[in-house]
Amino acid sequence: MTEEWLAKTREYVKGRLTGEGSGHDWWHIVRVTKMAERLAREEGADSFISQMVALLHDLIDEKIVGDEEKGVKEIEDWMASIKVPQALQEKISTLVRQISYKGGHASQEFLCLEAMVVQDADRLDALGAIGIARVMAYSGNKGRVIHDPNVVARQQMTLEEYRSTRGTAIAHFYEKLLLLKDTMHTKTGKKLAKERHAFLETYLHQFFEEWEGRA
Ligand code: ADP
Ligand code: NI
Image (cartoon, rainbow, N blue to C red):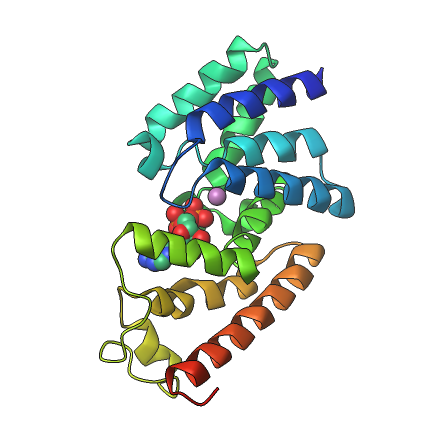
């Protein structure tokens, strides 16, 4: 039964998100679901719930659905239509709300293991090589420049100064990406985030060396 619900939900979400341009495209969901499956296995979380939450997690984002409550109603209607039992529906829907970036702030300490697994998987997708590609794609989509030394002067700036600047792709690394490693929940998630974080630092180092004509 669970395989069938997952297969149907995969098709549904694919239809909803194909061609989405704000970094919430279908392939983001595929990667997050794959990572959620791995983290669930390694951390002993429920695989079906973790994968369902991963598949549905972006459908309540206001950037996609306009209004979070409308998104919640839609995913509940969807699960009812494929006959996921009420108790599971409620569990999945509650977790989807919890892990959404905004909802996540308020309820950090109360996350259950499946919510931790999906939130870690989602955050990992903002790190590493994929994370860099997503920042550049998002910035291009919003018409932002890669880097502006007049806005963000040099690498030697303090993190505080850097974070106070907004609007370039490189600034987003300091505003968000480099902070994610310390927000991870699971052991495997922390390990992978550390590796992907180190890759971001290597990338930034090379970026500024090239920017100054030193490399
Ligand atoms: P999430 O749903 O994971 O919180 P967001 O909607 O915040 O994701 O972002 C989706 C992707 O776009 C992420 O990879 C994120 O790093 C990138 N992104 C978000 N905001 C910005 C920004 N201001 N500049 C560049 N990239 C951004
Ligand atoms: Ni996401």
